[in-house]
Length: 394
Ligand code: PLP
Image (cartoon, rainbow, N blue to C red; front, top):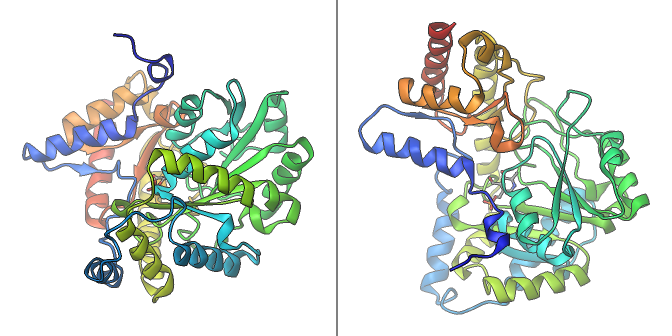
């Protein structure tokens, strides 16, 4: 029996496949250093878990909630966002979803017609292109010409057509950790307003910013830019809550109402217990966020110079946010004789048990992504093994 063309056209997540292989080797007893993780290596803070347990005991999690989430949580998200960006969102501007991942999926379903084009700057998070395809849209990749891993208006304009409906801006960026400056975002925002293009702001890593760098969101730049921005965020990275699957979208009320229809037919609602956990995360002590941020910062500052020293590894700039390094390894590939990053990563895993993600997964061959959402001890050991591996083949 035939499957849909839509589904045949979609690739599985390369990052998930690799981490599955690394996990299997670990289960077989090998000393694997897994640098593929896209999630924090901290447990969810105790007070958040406790609030969830209390919600269960009080019977609050026993029933369906509204598709867009419980009003208390939607209000708390609007309030926290307004406090941060001086915006004026109300709960009607907020949709709570099963992870930021489903927010992005539902947004694609809500704004795209078949053949509509979405501009996706390279490198990009693996799911963007496949979600656009599942909505029968067309992903259009945009290579930053500056060599800085950030697109400019000139880059975007070169790819704009009559069919361009949206552009996705992810800052701090997965996989490179770059952050767009206010001026860069203003230029892109004004260009989108002028051309009637939706701005999808994936701000998932907005709380993971290091070494005095600052984060600016598109929604704080001007009313016109905010009106055209669909903001995506979630609790996974900020509060170390990946398993709870809490994400959200902020946008104009009409879009959110329609998105609620998509959510209502697709998932119903995010599990009620996760919603109460998220509510506690926002309403209680925020020091856990800063503590985890500091830990990532310490790791980044220690490993960045070590990775930079690996022969043939080049980092355009020190990452400013998120929890990844994305070295260009083209010189190392040349020196070691591996034809591409996937064959390098495969041999690295089989021979040294260090798992990394090849840049192909993010649309940028010749690179690998190293996650530092793992202990410093493991990071140090992994870097030693990578260095020895490169030396052995050079
Ligand atoms: N956006 C980016 C850039 C991400 O890296 C991730 C997770 O890895 C997500 C969105 C989705 O996160 P979640 O679905 O856990 O909220």
